Image (cartoon, rainbow, N blue to C red; front, side, top):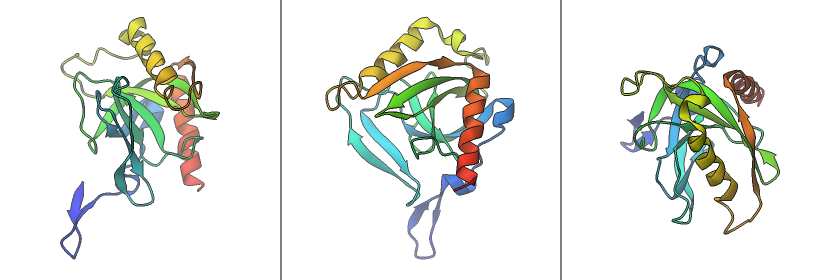
Length: 187
């Protein structure tokens, strides 16, 4: 998705211009990976500059337990693109986009603002035979690990600033996606 400018400089594509949110009404979204599973780097998409940046380095005890990304052309209540948790058997590199199947939502509060996380899997996963269709397919232990991570990853800097407020199904996720698509369109 990178291109050369007329000056010969490598320029990254602006994901909010070249990608749409996807067919979210039917449970498929486009998502761009910001942070690979296992990384300690908090990489964020800088919408104004259309580049990725390292926001901070997280403590070694809190690597990302899942690939982390965003849905283009959305704005969540916190002012950033709507986040995704991309469940895959392998870490996905920063800047890769994929079509993903929505399987649920993590309702999450960060510093008093809702910061939803749409849980997705690759839309075409031949390794699993496309067998993951809901949060229940991931198991209770997977949800416990995600809850633990998001409840504690800021504790060394700002204890108590994050709260997991439960999970929602595909329909709840689609409702939040619709709100975030509308918020992007109205800006």
